[in-house]
Image (cartoon, rainbow, N blue to C red; front, side, top):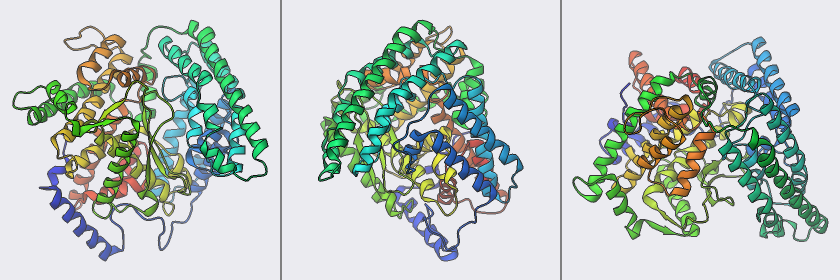
Length: 604
């Protein structure tokens, strides 16, 4: 299907905003509804159904079996506990998923909300069981999103306001060695089944573990200003400080044991082939996208989309550096512009916050209605240094705000705003913060599992890319440099569709590469198409090799979002109705994160 630009519906940014205000007023007058986000309260809330109860019971069970996930969702009562990463822990979570699926079979579906919940649970939990039975859960290891990272990163979002919070942290630190022991047992069992991450992933994970074992994070975390403020005047301060110091040492020692296990026991069992093959890839693709793809058609589309976005970027390059200028020449011109350069992470953090705040201020009441708790997005420099950029959502009660994190390698000291403005929109508003925050706030329509636990990368990351394009079409990226940066990001996402499917499925590479895709040819593909400092790009390259199916879910998700929007427009026309794009966005976001196959049914 041809790609339809959102901006083609209106002539200019000013006419868009004017039209949005008019439509908002019409809807509020006619139906008393808000334009974008549905507010937390309603005149009459939806009564819980049996399906809602099953979903919420599953959330409670999941929180009990995975306390780290509970902390991530902002659920209270689990912050001092640790997830069991042993084979028994994985088995218990799989059994819980099977029990919930069985309960769904017996429960009546009473309305469209139940239909969406049932579809999401069946897709998500069915794949969790399938992945568990295939051994994938126990084999979980990569450079970005495995227990190697989660066991440390959870402390970035742990509550730290009072002595009780720090007592929970001390307990979780003390439990970290048992979690590592369970994790290594699972990795060993998976290896016995022939499932081991590629050697380069194991070596990288070992290096990360060694950094945590010898680095200063845990020591600094339990002795910094935050803990001083929380324990000031507390009668238990002395004992707590001793517990925290002991916990930090236990955590460092556990990471040291993990590093030794990875280097001496797992790495010798790992192969050199990065490709996971079609059977495993198809499974992970369904998990991340939330729909079944024709992988060969998607690969062909990825090649075509890469060429299309490159041509669009070349046209903008001519605006920046003159007629006939190459993309490289435009990059050089933008990088040389001192008004687009930030020196140091303090300047980066301040600019991120300013850009985010300005976007929220401009969009609220014009393109979206953003409830007060979601008008706060904290932009932070992450305590890690691996090159990742990510978002963590607000807590269940919205007391912990959404946060954008930037993990900066130590050798990266300068940043360019033309590259990163669209990143702030991707992670913030109207991207992840608006999307995730909307679901968390929508208590009147969604059960707790839908609000807090339901997540499909194709929905969430697809929306974030869709949101980048939306900001361009709303006029926020009219500056050629900023628009060039958005296209640079879109080109990266198209490139990794080609990379990910090409390498993991062993597909034929076009000229100038030729032959079959592998890691080295993939690196050349990235360096030929992605303008990114090498430390960041090396991290991305390793990520795609070790996390099959996840990276394409962004661009593929954007494609499916656009297709769903177009089909909903056609369905509205067939009913003789006007298709209102802002209302479409509001309805879609208020559904929460759904598998994309379920989203289309729920919307159209």
